[in-house]
Amino acid sequence: MGYVYNASILRFRPYRDIGEFANVGILLSFPQLDKIIFRLEKRRQRIVGFFPEIDRPLLQNAFQYIEDVFREKSQHNGIHIDSGAVVFDFLSRDACEIFQYLTSVKEGMFVFSDTISGITDNADERMDALFEYYVLRNFQSSDETREKRLEKSFRSTLTNFKLNTKFREGHLGNESYRVKIPFFNEKLSIRTLCLEREKTTEIYECGDQWEARMARLHKLNEIPSRILFPISYPKNPDSKMKNAVSETQEKLAQFDFVKIMPVTETRKVIEFIKYYCR
Image (cartoon, rainbow, N blue to C red):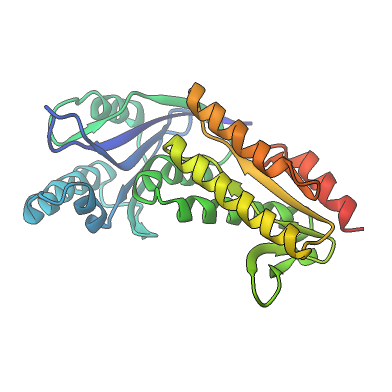
């Protein structure tokens, strides 16, 4: 049985007239359980990265105020530090009222977003997913971080299907030219590819980079039987992004040893991998 939840993103918006903000927390309410979870980013240096001109004491006092509000609501229960965030996890008969009251405030440095609703079987996992997507996405938006997250997620998928032992970290190429591959064996090498980028230029550059690498490996005749690229795509792409993704895939697909698959098509990806790992 799943539980209905309501969620709202806490935004730090020091300049209302400009409209710039940084996502700094998640408020999650479970009406059926009278449960509230609030997770607030603790690493203030990251906020300073967004707004370097912000007065540090003012910033600290503003975040302390938010923490104090929830300490009062949670009556000093269920508070802990988790991965750089302070987490308030508590039960309250006024859970719905607290959620509605806090999210209705639209003035000041801190404002909550519109409500996001859904159903989940696990409150903690839902909070982890929302915090990862909405908060850490803003702070860790580098291409390298996106790629690492996708790689980590794919590694978990291999583990779930008991395929992780079939691969090791390795390299393609020879002493004069080497390409690092996170999932390697002699029959199939896998390189997750994140095309979920902010700009079309970044998508094109990613495609150009891997096309050049594949062309070099092909010229050296230093490739396994197949190379699989499980790809993650932009969410809600416009026409320019769609064209960039299409061209990137065409660049890679020109090599007969390359296989491209959406990383979200888990069953098909796993079946393909199992075929080459028999």
